[in-house]
Length: 102
Image 1 (cartoon, rainbow, N blue to C red):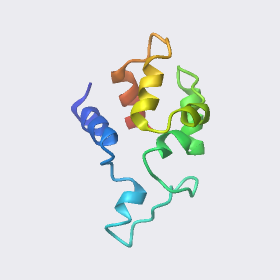
Image 2 (image 1 turned 120 degrees about the horizontal axis):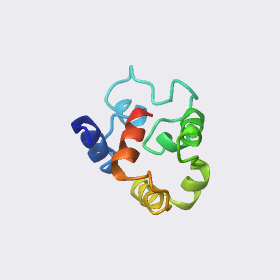
Image 3 (image 1 turned 180 degrees about the vertical axis):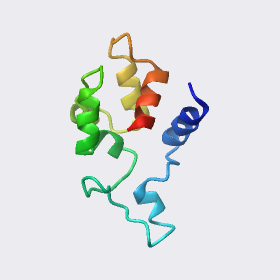
């Protein structure tokens, strides 16, 4: 796994990503809303933004993230569910790299 993806994964799991919601607390010039859909941008937005949902569904795994998010209310639980899904091409490296690209 690339070092930048490792750093991203570490920050994602510790809720330390500079999401719009988090960054807007430090600067009034930063909008907390997603520039694509207008909803609040936080870690769950990687799964729930309409753009992200389409990206996940178009992935080799055909994942419907709204169902995944309804069952799992935290990022670590969602990742564990994906890893336990039985799809052989889903592993931590592929999953975090995909999330980093989203």
